[in-house]
Amino acid sequence: MTFEDAIAALGEEFGVDIPVEDGVASFEVSSDGDNLSPVGFTLTYEPEDETLLVSADAGAVDPERGEEPLLGMLEANHMFAGTMGAAFCVDDGRAKLERRVSLATFWREGGKSILMSLFKSVCDWRRKTA
Amino acid sequence: MTYEELIEEAGAAIGIEGFTPDADGVCTLVSDIGEIVIMDCKGQKETVLLNAAVTDVPPNAGAALLAALESNKGFKDTNGATLSVDPETHRFELSRYAFLEDLDPDNFIEMVEKFATTLVAVREKLESAGDKLAEGELPELGEFIRV
Image 1: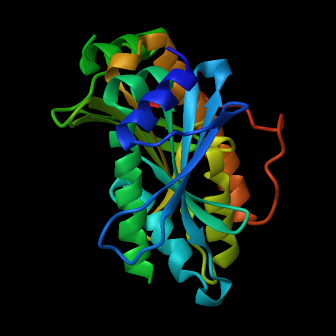
Image 2: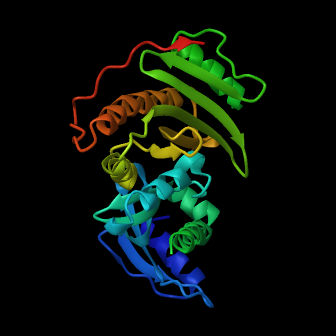
């Protein structure tokens, strides 16, 4: 089973076609009946250890809000209590929730359930910091 | 292999005979870099968690908080671990977990050694927030001592 197979299966579960280019798949997930903007996902394949980096974009970090959102993300990371096994980070001024998972685990556990747990954590965080 | 067998065999491999977790599945490695707590989490999948205190969150912590979050990006600077803040102690902590089914004594020892190396590096980084973690300049580990 390859990264492309896993993404094709994920696309089938979501009912969409997810393009893959150079080991990277990007797409958005939104929820019905929610005013929150869609969450952008990027899945990057790391062939050296057959691992996926799953990254969910939680939005721009607003510098005017000072330390509060930064501290909130780091506290959510504590013992992974607010992230369901993932980790908040900041990448080029944007808050992201990320998880590394082996391709085998992604396939075995079902990629959709892994993505939806990140989606839920990002939505919870956005509501909390709105 | 059970969690208890993993801990005991890994302990013996690094010269700590009879290294076993307590009744709550917790054991602690102590060295001059601090304590690394090892825990067994019996959730949906049995998980082994490493946790260590890094340093206190300083007053006016913006730069240090941002440095911690940027270190978490892609798990690269943290060698697979995650930086967090304990809301109770207001202290930076470093954590990493792995599923028990993926571990054997050899890769568990490797995981703990990487974790300890990372602990030293991120402590230095956060205590001088803004400094870049220089690759290849990580300090050598001290010898582990059983508590």
